[in-house]
Every structure is written in C-alpha cells, then in structure tokens.
Length: 325
Image (cartoon, rainbow, N blue to C red; front, side, top):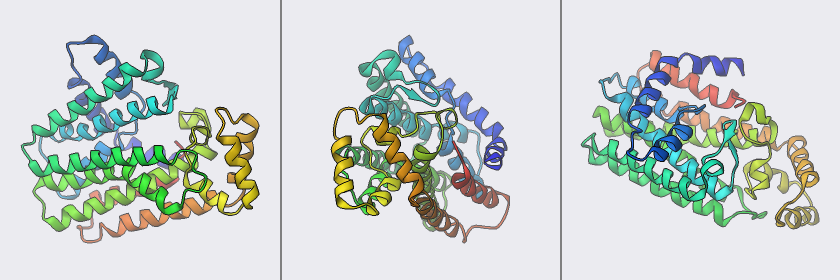
C-alpha cells in the first residue's frame, strides 16, 4: 500500500497543474456555484482520469501547452457524475467530508453537476476536434445508461456477474477509456494507437471499479473515505456479493433479500453479510478478476515503444490493484 501511494507521489507536479487548471476554469457569476464546485472538485480526488490522459500523451511522445487544461475535462465529467450519484444514493460522506447534497440540498447538487458537465463540454469545444467531442459524448451517454441500469437492478439479489460487468463498464470504465483514447485523438495518432489506448483505459477502468468493490467490504472509513458496506446498504449488488451469494443455499439468499429489501436492514444484517463476503473467498476471486483486466490492459500497450512513459503506465496498472484507498 505504501508503494501505491509512492507511485502517486511521483506525479505531484502533474496533480498540482491539474488542480490549478480546475480552479482557474471554475469561475461563475453565481457564488454558490463556485462554492459547490470548489467543494466537489478541489478535495482528495485521485485525478486518475486526467493523469491517464497526460500519461497517454507522453506515451505518444506528444506534448503541448494546453494539455493540462484539456485533461481537466475528464475530472469535470467525473465530478459531475459523483454529484448526481450522491443525490441518487442520498450519500452524506465522500472523500472523508460531507457531500454537496448534504450541505446544500439535492436540487443545488444536481444543478452543480449540470454546471460541471457543461464546463467540460465548453473546454472540449475549444479543442476544435469533432472526433474528441464524439468520444466524450459517447462516453457520457454510456455513463448515464450504466447508472440507470444499476438503479434498475437495485436490491436485485439475482443479478448475474455478466450484467454487473455491463453496469460497471458504463458507469466507470468508459470515461477512463475515453481519457486514454482521447490522448491519441489530440496527438493525431494512427487509428490503431487510438484503439489500443481505448482498450487500455477500458480494462484499467474495469479493474479500478472491481478494486473499489472489494474496498467497500474490507477497507475502513478512515482510509477509504466513505463508510464500509455503503454499497450493500444502498442495495447495490457488486461482484464480491454476487460471488458470495453463488455459494449460499437458496433459502439463505432469500432471507438476505427480504432483510435488505426493507428501508433499514440494520447493523446486524450488514455485519453478517460483510463477514460472509470477507470469509467466503469472494474477495480473492474478485481481486483475481481485476488482475485479469490489468493483464489485458498491459497487453494492449505491447505495440508502443518501450521506455519510461510505458513503464509509468504499467506501474499505475499495478497501483490500481495494490491500493487500499
């Protein structure tokens, strides 16, 4: 875990520049919009999406002065989706601090999400690239579909692993894929390179979400930044639970379904399910699944030149599976 944090520390300068650009473009004539934007954007976010965009540009040996500004597009979209997520889930804590909807209410939080998304599109237009815009809009359409699909399967204790993978591809992986492939578009790279970067990002995104799913069961609120078992309490059936349920008798599955279909399943039921997930081998199985996605991500970089930029992307790959936050 220390090594994972050290990898991120190597990109301190990138994170500082990304944050500068985020703050610089967050201006609004409405002070509340800026207040909520600062709260949502300028905290403890990992900046994975803008960082992957920048690292993909370096892999292509491409650099120009506005890349930090362009990279923030992916963080604006990500932050907008989190604001909307927190409203849907009625969340009160994210990244170890109160959510925007908790502080300012659902209406304001939804509108702030719309504002941040619009900021992202404004920046995207400045690139004068229709292909870049197409990739972004395709990604956001799939993100919305993924979120709706997740909502449709809330408390669905019969959810299959395949359907769950479809959900996380939409809600998480497609934006990370867009961040990677967009570097190729901005750099004017060949179609094959753009495709490979998109495949890389998609697999990274799948692995990233699977590790998040694991951490929801095994981490702590102090480290993870949100309550452990949060997904379970909200009726989100994730892969560790799906694999755990596969090993239970039908009667036991139905008992849990009944308990968790109520408004408040209670601490005892939460603790019981979390314990089952931790002890039943599901965590190791999901971690192995995440490792397979990371292997595919690494394979997609094979046609790129060996060098520091590729090494850094592969190190970031490893960070995703080693992290505890």
